[in-house]
Every structure is written in C-alpha cells, then in structure tokens.
Image (tube, rainbow, N blue to C red; front, side):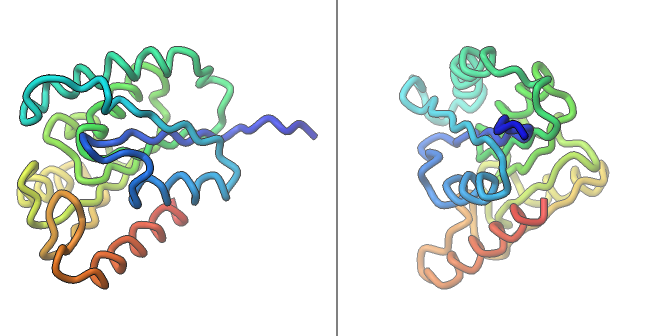
Length: 183
C-alpha cells in the first residue's frame, strides 16, 4: 500500500492570527491525526498598509497564497478541507474557486468578502455574536438563506475569546475542536 496521502487540509490564517494560534493549530493537529496532509500558510509577513482595509489585505494574502497553492496538485486528493480564519476565509473561498471547487470549508469568524463562497453542504461557519468585523445578524440571515451550517457563540467577538473568563474561551475551543473531528 502506498504512503501517499489522499486527503489534504490547508490552513488559512487571519491578520495577526497565525496557524500557531489555538483555533488553527488544533485544526492542523486534528486533521493530521485523521490522515490528512496539512499545509499551513503564512502571509502575515507580507501584509502591508492599512490594517483596517480588509479588501487590500485579502488581495495581498491572495497574491502570496497563489504562489504556494500553484504547486499543489489538487486533483491528486480525494478529500480537500480548507480551514480559515478572518481574512483567510475570503482567501480560502477564492482558492476553492480557482483550484478545487469540491473543497469543504470550515470558516472561522469570516469577513463579509467570504459570504459569496459559502454554499450549502460544503461548509460550516463559526463566529462570535459580538463580532465587530462581520455583524452576527447579517451572518445569521445569510447562512439561513443559503442553508449553511452556522455555530455562533454568545458574548465573544472576532477572536472567539472571552478575555475575562478563560474557562469559557477553552470551552469554545473544545466545541470547535469537536466540529473539526466531526467534519
């Protein structure tokens, strides 16, 4: 039997949220334990300019990502999962359109630019109800209209952290890790 892996997981970080931070680190660990080849992206060092200009950050991250993903033979994989955070959700959506339309996605705290890539049966969305980057009501209405699975957490924002209650933050992380295992 061949050692060639037929499953691929690509991790798309957010601005100032690397693949070494908990939500993405554990995604990589979970998918690797399930036999996936894991590719981690790191475009944060190339992001320049206004950190609030999300479209510009997405384009800069996309330019970096294309160079990395051009070398991956997506047709060699039977199962492809993209796990993305924040601006990475839009980059992952673009990557799916260009490289592998059958990709399954876990979108963590998406930005508005990622909404157009979210489709029924291909993804799950995780967000905080106090997210200031993408209004939780807008996200909920969009996901309901598109029949997209959505898990929203009360009293946390874009980081999915409760800065006053570490136990709550860890409980959220455990729920998200269970989602990775079930996806």
